[in-house]
Amino acid sequence: MSYFHLKRFFLIPLWFGLLAWPFIGSAGAGRLVLTLIAGSLIAGGISRFASTPRFRQEALRLKGRGKRSAVVSVATSNHSLKVVIFRFRTYFKRFLPSLERIPRKGLQAVGVALLLFLPLFLNNYYLDTLSLAGLYALLAIGLNITVGYAGLLDLGYAAFYGIGAYVYALFSTGIGLSFWLGLPLGGAAAAFFGLILGVITLRLRGDYLAIVTLGFVQIVYLVLNNWDSVTQGPNGILQIGRPEIAGFVFRQPIHFYYLILALLAVISTAIHRLVHSQIGRAWIAIREDALAAEAMGIDTTRMKILAFVLGAGIAGLAGVFFAAKYTFVSPESFGFLESVRVLSMVVLGGMGSLPGAILGAFLLTVLPELLRGLANFRMLLFGAALVVMMLFRPQGLWGKRS
Image 1 (tube, helix red, strand yellow):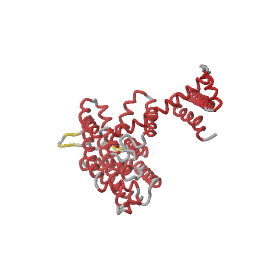
Image 2 (cartoon, one colour):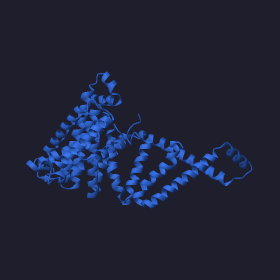
Image 3 (cartoon, helix red, strand yellow):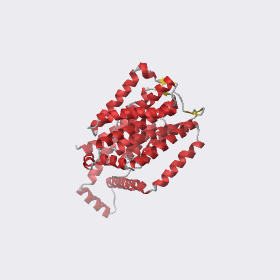
Image 4 (cartoon, one colour):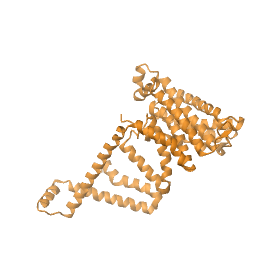
């Protein structure tokens, strides 16, 4: 039996059974697997039998006499199902590229208008969700510099996020540092560690770079979790100062929403201009072919370090906002899974696309909340939607096919 038949008849049913196990129990999952295997074997046997020359001749002879046997009907139905599936896949693949023909400037204008005025009609729960989405959009923009533009796979991005949050938390609770001074300080501290990591990983690329960054985020997590005298260990740091302007303290969700929206607008504008400059073109050249870029006179070492530093600095800014909004930080918020979550947002929206990173962050933050009414099935549906998206449009929602 070939691998194709093994996957079709056994592995795929087992995969569906494992997915359904938490929801329908082991007995129900077992029955589902057996049913899928039996159905696959029956459909495969009928399809294989119907493809033999002898069967085709017999089918044509019966058709000429105006007769249809049960096997002929089943085989014809199976063939029709294949045709329907093929046509659906073809239509879907033709439809998704048509998204690129939609005027994106108009979509961006509509999106900006919604972000500005829609929160005025929402309650605090949805405002808090949108604020969190804006925070992840800021993180996705920073990671998109490293992964999307420079082509450097960074799995330790949450470490810079945590460094920025803890730097502001320590200075805020220790000496009463204001948010507006802590914002550049947290970004600078994270950028400094990004510089160190960039220098260490100069000669690494691909999987080796990913492993080193993965080790970095684990080191930062362990330091934050075990340095009790400074970081308070797993208990975290409480009573962090909130943003304040002329005696007005940011407390309500709508205050933090427009604050993160302002930060997002400033950072997005700066990154947009940077990407369309000589530096951005150098990053793209390094992503496509580092050796060719170096042969053309691009200082690949300096450009890679710059990508790490800028991405880490933006993560540090996001960490300061996180600490000020929730007035509490703990190591659990800055682990490896947080890096994976931000990376998923970048991939879904489209690597190397600034609007795509923002779109992916909002979708992966807002959609799970909208599907919360489906209880346990919401993550299953959400994961299946992501798998379908990656199969039919791997370049992302806003990305361009290379």
